[in-house]
Length: 295
Image (cartoon, rainbow, N blue to C red; front, side, top):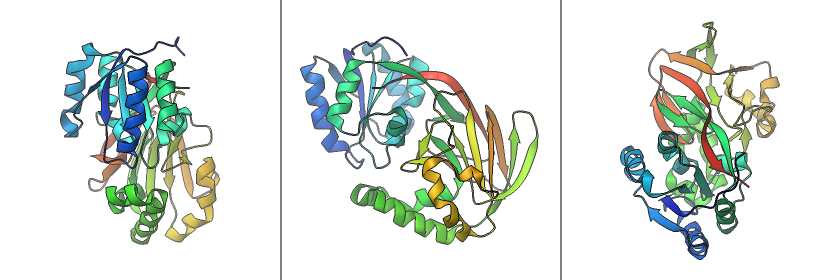
């Protein structure tokens, strides 16, 4: 933990399309103006050029401020890693899993005061084939879920939208084969419904990757859902919010600093709720890679 340093100028990346994005901006702008902090808006679309924009303007600010959900804060990760600027998050999405992991308040006005206080802590970053993630990178069922969960349904229905999309994804889920190689070089071939690799603690609207997982432990936590029948997932559904699903004999768990995952054909990878990569993939952790502002 570093000593509190109040920001003076912040690069603002906001997602007005997030569930509470537009409404969240008003109290944040008011709080920062009252504190004498200048906000420098940075166009967030298209995502592919956002990193370059933030890096180019890094010398003008001492903070990157993300207003939105997990996808929004994910979009600034590469720039924060390259520039060393700390990141402040105003949770304004549907799941807000990184905010949950960091103990950030969900009220935008309260979160703004946390950021203005400037208390920083180093956290780990996960990486898949050159793309960073904070919470979880996964393939299989979660990709189906992302495909079923439109931005409109997230914004309108919130967690109910997640539940409906999950039920539809489960109805279409089918096991697939994958080869998982750990940092020791040992390879395991599995038949699975989903493989998830967690850098943080929370994902999917409050589920826990593994009961001992933390975002600053320098480790990745992997689990593989090796159920022969999809309906059996319902028997352990209650264990996901506590991270105890790994106690099931049909859930494989591994911990390490790197994993390689290969599949028969390329499979898309969901990172922090966004489809941002595909197999074959190398999952790596970068310990204490960037600084986040926390309560």
